[in-house]
Image (cartoon, rainbow, N blue to C red; front, side, top):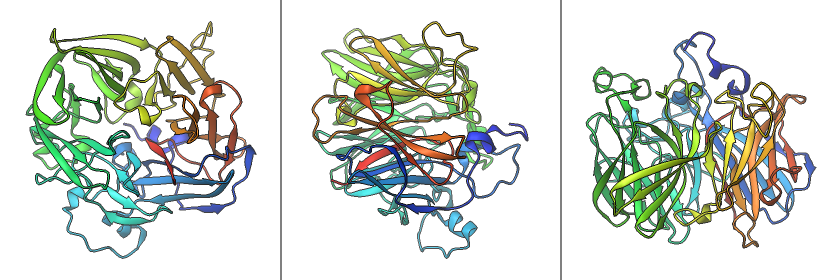
Length: 457
C-alpha cells in the first residue's frame, strides 16, 4: 500500500459519524410483504495511524441498516460494533468482559440473524458480537464457542431445513480447524476437529450439503514466522507458492476428513453446494493469481463449478462465468440443497470492467449485479452507470412465494447526484428491469462486505 490508499477515499472512504434517520423517502414502491431489516457490515476505521500501511480488513466494523414495514422505510441507522477498543475511541465506558484483547475485535465481515438474535461476525478466533434490534451493541457472544476456544466464523451458514447454524472456524498458528454446529436456539450441539497444514490456511468460507461439509486449503496462509513476532494476524497473510491446493470433505455428523488435490488456486466465497449421488457439486468464486490480502482488488475472481467425484477420488472444475465477480448469494432457503439461481456482484472493489454482449472492456462499467440461471446456462445483468458503486446483494424471499427466485435483491448503491446512498430493491424475476424501489438514505454508505435480510416474522 502507498499513502494513496484506495480504501481511504472514493467509494471506500470511511464515514465519521453515527446517523439515525426516520421515515425515509422512497422512489417507487416498497413491496408490502417485506417486514424486517436489511443489514450490511464493513470495515470503517475510527482512527488511522499510517495511511500507507492501513489494512482495510483490519478496521473496526460498522453496521448499516434499514427497517422496512408496511411498505415504508421506518429508519436508517449506522453503528460501530462496540468492542473494548471502540468504546475507548468513542470515549464511552467499557463493559466488563473477560475476553483476551486479541479476541476482542469489532467484527467487520458479516451480520446475520439466528435464534431470534442479531450477530456481527468475523474470523480468525475473534468473538462474535450480539446486536440489539436497533443495532446497539449488547456485547461479545459465545455463539459457537467450543472447549478449544473456537467460535462461529464470518461465513456461518444456516440450514433452513434443520434450523442448524454451521461454521468453519480457525485460529492463526494452530494446525487444525473446527466444524461447529449450533442448534435452532444458538446452543452448541456438535464439533468436529479438522487437521490442517502447519501453516494455517486462510479458510474464509466453506460449503455445506445435506450430507457433507467441504473445506478449502489454498496457498493463502498465515506466515508462522510473522505470527511468532506478534504481528497482527491480518498482516501475516501471504501467498505460499509451494503450498498445494486441496479440498477436504467430511460428513456433517463428524468423522475423518478426506482430502482431494486441486490446482493451487484460491477460493474466496461459496455460492452453494449440493449432493448428487456420489458427486458433490460446489459453485465457488475462484482466483488463480497470487492473492494479496491487503489489496483484494489485485485479482480477477470468476464463478466456477467444481465437481467432487467421491468414487473416483478427484475434483474437476469448469468456469460458469469468466467475467470478474464475487460476493455470490442465493435464496438462502436453498443452502445445502440443489439450487438453480445465483446472484453475484461485479464490484468496484476489483476495479475491472464487466463487458456485456458486444461491448468492449473500454466501454464497460465496473459495477453490475448478475443473475445466473444455472439450469439454462443464461445470465441477466443489471448495470449501473459509471461512478455508481454496488456491492453484495442479499436475497429477500417473498414469504408468500414458492418459486426459488420469487423475491428481491437488496443492496446499497451510491447516488452521486445526492452525495449519499440508496437502498436498492430489485425484483429477482425482473432482474434487469427498473428497480421496484430506491430508499434514499441521508448519508453515504461506504463499500463494505456482507449482509443479510433479516425478516421479523
